[in-house]
Length: 153
Image 1 (cartoon, rainbow, N blue to C red):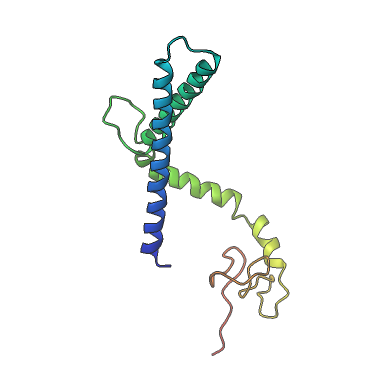
Image 2: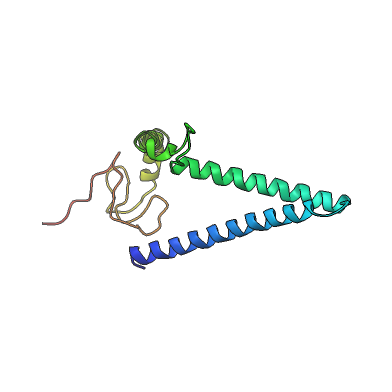
């Protein structure tokens, strides 16, 4: 599948999800409004009203929180568009986290040593296999312990 087709498919799924969420919010609002108009509501109606009210408040709070994270709302609220305003800092923090927790020599070297391939590097890192022995997804090599295999001249 081409990248533009994949992006279109993902955009379609996003729009469907947004439509479902908006529809559910509208149903909660309609149920809440209808329960308010019931004369002398019984226990069942009051329970239904409480559930609809909780769904409505929760849905609106979630919408506002997610929207405020990613877009300026044009309101005098100080904490909107947090992600775009801090994307460089967030990216640097994520890179630091990955480097410190997933790309350490202590974690990578044992995976390199599992190989028994005759074409492996001196550490045992296989260029033709991933650390778990499955076929590679790319021709990358372990940057912490191995160099690319030498080609015959």
